Image (tube, rainbow over all chains, first blue to last red):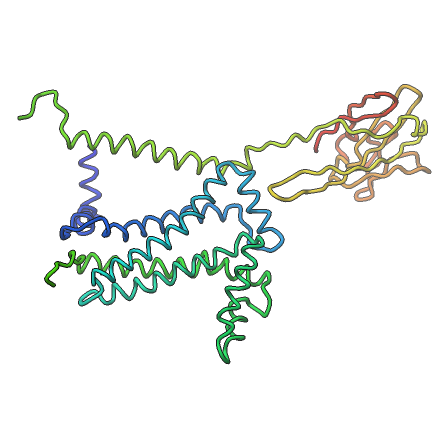
Length: 219
Length: 161
């Protein structure tokens, strides 16, 4: 019965084709360094899920941000767990994406025909850092406030357009409710949307072209 | 090669993966459900004995308004609601305490000295000194609170609503 049902669904959705193409594809004999891409993808999924859960209680307003985070940590059942996973997952994701990039670089896996895979990967690394930067402000504690003050001041040192960049980042000349709101928006909508798009292209190319093998000594 | 009762490596892996997967799934799902339900499960105790001051301070025969506030905590916010009750002493031992909330549509009633009646200004509801409806749309008498006197202090058993 279950087999018949699966056959019926598979005939229409082509699930086994997806399985064969995505999971059962041929890969060269590789080592543990090649698992970092999957690890990054897993961490991203983890961040999405825990992030969605955090928005249930978090309020991106100077009046409520800090208190709502304290509420999540101290009052909500397993709130400490969800936020803890999101917090450490963020750090791990930056590390994993970065080492994933190093692996690709040192193994020269960015070369023809994988240039676009590399390029989307570069933007994925930047987007990941952007997630870290925007997410850091959201707890609205002293560390968040001053880290973002400094972090937005740095691009402000650029000649001529520095002041304009600060005003774009902060939504005005001061770090304010507008800054918090736009960082929140970028953190939960803009960057995740960009990351999902880039991951789609990245993964499509990995599946289409296949992954490079470990370079041999004589190469 | 295969003995009849020998567990194949492939089957062993399947069972282990299924078991570990179930445990891991439960470890993720149960906290997630608890997280979402958390505020709904935190029931706040709203009823309490409220002191209204020394009983002697209330004049016999004159309904007197007493106002107080109650604070409830919703999430990270404190919500302060104010309430009013009318205390009426009939003699040294008998007294009644009514909510000033009209039983019609929750406007606040006031004691009219000249009429010797409670008036709800919204829809002209009138109640007598015992809280009974005299005229107007109110469907029920004023809500009366359970009272007690301890060491000369009057208390009401306050129930939200």
